[in-house]
Length: 417
Image (tube, rainbow, N blue to C red; front, side):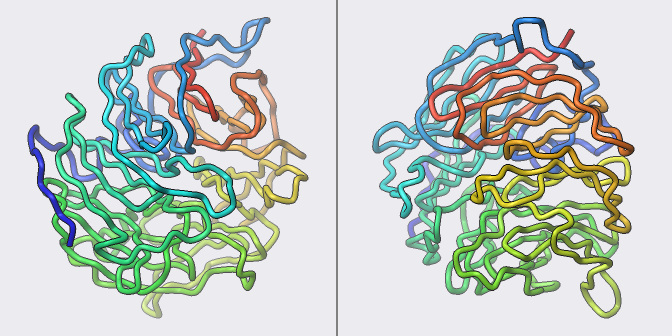
């Protein structure tokens, strides 16, 4: 085991990252998909419905290296994980100016098998005074948020036999109480829990290879459950000890396929999953018989990589395979039945945020789209260019400012009137 405790300081807050309950307004964006890892912002800040005549207002921008890890925002700082040359960097920037506050780096030798991009894929996760990164090469680092000092590190390739797969490691770390949950996808370690303070292995479980979705905490009627969408399908685990609560096959018959959209909690009885390559969407329910689909259908809402959003009893998500070159459609489904309420028609592929009764869509073309979160019909509000085309990375929203990146830069975009 390659475990090294370097430095430990600061206090740790909350049971799951920095989030509050879903009913409490939260202005930070401390992890992948926001405070509750569901793409929904509870920030009370009012947002614009129309951009200025000359397009969205860029407050600042700064140069970046490669990678697809999206930004985080906690307090007055923005954190971004990227690669420059042979080093992966975690940078802290002023949220108001973009000026660098500190920079942590380590050597990485990751090389994408398809020549796609050699930078990190997974968003970091903030918990108290710690930031946890999971690099494409398979290394986990814990870094002090106030200083950028290394707290501890683990090599999941050496320790658990983590496999690179098609595109490297991509699942964002999930913090549950004193545990950092990650997907090594090793022969006997589909999922592992590391001690948040020290990095020590607390438990490991499963024999599946990892997928590209991130783990999700589901507060089920039977208690907390970590839901993971892996290479072969779904796995549910008890966060306390890693006991496998359910395991269900859910993958394409195609070898060259991926599960990439993170599971979505609906309520204490149900959660939703979606995948492309002929797998389709499903609403799952726990019962005395185990995990069963309430409904499951191909062609309804087949998410390639962007995680759908659940709000107002409905699911909003990007449907269709990205690699066909024909774009996607934003669709709205009634969650309980899977009934389609509306579709946007063709759009460039993109990521979603729900905020202030609106859908914020950042497309691979670098376009920012505002739409109404109506469940009755597709209602476009406005659109404008903020980034270069040809990149996919989830944005972050905090205090009326959207933080988004492409292959070369990070921008802060004003969304308040």
